[in-house]
Length: 273
Image 1: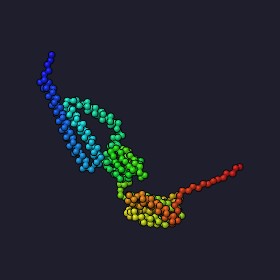
Image 2: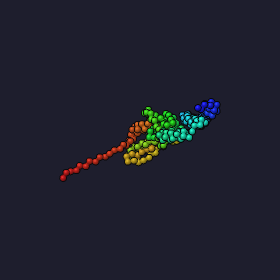
Image 3: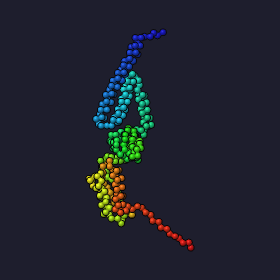
């Protein structure tokens, strides 16, 4: 009957295992310490680069998770565990997750690009992905807009970045494009003078660039004036609405007609033979 050799067991098995476990723990502890330093360094670099706080935090979380995974694999390898199959399993799982979350990853990538290149910011009035509204939040996966009638719209970032983005707040000034028609029998010079006076009286209309008043078209039933004043972007809608109302009232007071579409119906009587 074989006798248990404690010295041989300790020398051949227990001691090497204890050494490997201690080395694995050392690898894990040192690896975690190095990972924290790298994550902190990356965070400071992104902060100096002026990246969005949300994006910086998200990238730091991903970097921390990846470094922790590397440290765990290194510690398992120190214990003598075959990590080849483990790495292959992680790769396969990552591929499966990537395919399952393809749309989400596209939205994430688009969110990163929106935050980096900043085609718009919070508070801007934009038109994108078939909707329009004021930007309230730019997230990693979606952007939240508030419409003029106080509705909330959540738009995936992939839809925004893949299409045309119109930022109505990007510039300090905007041009208002209006068209006013008068009848062919009305006084053209009088109508122009009225339009000019209304533009000069409104202090919100900028002197430079100069507003444009021009005959744009001799239409079928009217002579159309193109009126294009420049205003601050914040005054755009208020001036547009006010000017439209003032022109109508001023034309009515001056006896200038604003033609509207008409249809002439001719009735022919057919006598029975």
